[in-house]
Image (tube, rainbow, N blue to C red; front, side):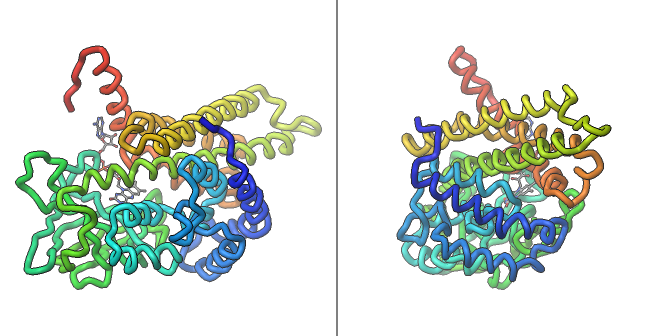
Amino acid sequence: MQTEPTDRVRAMLGKIAELFEKDVYPLEPKFLGKSFRAMLPELARIRGRVKELGLWAPHLPVEQGGLGLRLSEFAHVSEALGRSPIGHYLFNCQAPDVGNMELLLHHGTDAQKAEFLAPLARGDIRSCFSMTEPDAAGSNPTTLATRAVKDGGDYVVTGRKWFTSSADGAAFAIVMAVTNPDADSPHMRASQIIVPTSTPGFRIVRNISVMGEPGDDYASHAEVDYDACRVPQTNLLGHEGAGFLLAQERLGPGRIHHCMRWVGICERAMDLMCRRAATRELSPGKPLGLKQTVQTWIAESRAEIHASRLMVIHAADKIDREGVHAAREEVSLIKFFVADVLQRVLDRAIQTHGALGLTDDTPLAYWYRHERAARIYDGPDEVHKSVVAKRILRGYGIEVKA
Ligand SMILES: Cc1cc2nc3c(=O)[nH]c(=O)nc-3n(C[C@H](O)[C@H](O)[C@H](O)COP(=O)(O)OP(=O)(O)OC[C@H]3O[C@@H](n4cnc5c(N)ncnc54)[C@H](O)[C@@H]3O)c2cc1C
């Protein structure tokens, strides 16, 4: 397993670091705590620069306008982009679009690729993924209530979703809906269907305030009503009843993307913490870094970030070599482990900054608000720990039921 970036990735990382210093970090103070929509013109300018530099959509194949990186290569890029809250958006590899692009790439028909993937890959439109419902446990999506019923050549989609990230301003949603309620396996009852947001019956009820932030545009989480949304049956992704299988395939690489983004956040937080520890003097000539408590935070953070990076690269490498289903345990391990490291590193960095850490003068408070969710979305910690423990116990002859 190659743990260090390949030569081509190393060259990219140099260009990314340069761009961040020159264009991205200076924009952060304007972005933090502000409306995302108000920032779009400035973000569009930097997106143009990313295209000029030949760094656009690093996760996509060359034929789709990307760079054709393997997942274990993209992981290093995702870490570098994670150093700024706007990094992934600027390179068109932000969630949820990145997962939707991968779904369309691997399971879309030629017509779906032309209509939905191509403009998404160019960055002309955005998209969202609509699975979680207010009245069903998101941790167990076999309980979904949203239905898609065949009528003539169409599906009619009816249901209520929430936490559909980035629905505000998206051109289409990929909706998980039950199409085969009588299938024997509860995991074969739902399908993924593309619903353009211009479809009559699609309505954003509200952008949900999360940790005090109302959110707009890409930085939003919507409650969405699907009131008999009629779309052609050709908008089905993959085959009927394959919704969970596709979701699993989407979430595997998606968790690599998230975890390496979190490693990038940790590295930036670590850098800010060390700078502050070296320059903030408690008394003349006595910087904060002389305190053993701060040294312990620095050393423990370094160890935890290093372990996280290696674990994620290992999981990405396994997906590259053996496919997403073979790496189920590794993916669950990193999901709860790195999310937890992220909380601790951010907390230590904020504590080192004192009151400054709570302001929007650094990105720490933004991340502290936004990334508490890391322990919940894409499967809460407890679900992933359960997946890992059940597999281990099976080796000891115990079959643990849900
Ligand atoms: C910021 C954010 C963005 C999101 N974006 C999207 C999106 O774009 N699209 C989308 O469809 N969804 C999205 N979600 C929803 C997310 O996937 C769900 O919140 C998640 O799956 C958990 O479901 P739930 O909130 O219904 O919690 P519940 O299922 O109600 O679970 C509540 C709690 O119960 C505990 N629990 C659950 N299962 C177990 C278990 N087996 N063992 C022990 N304890 C358990 C956990 O502590 C869990 O936090 C997002 C969520 C957040 C916070």
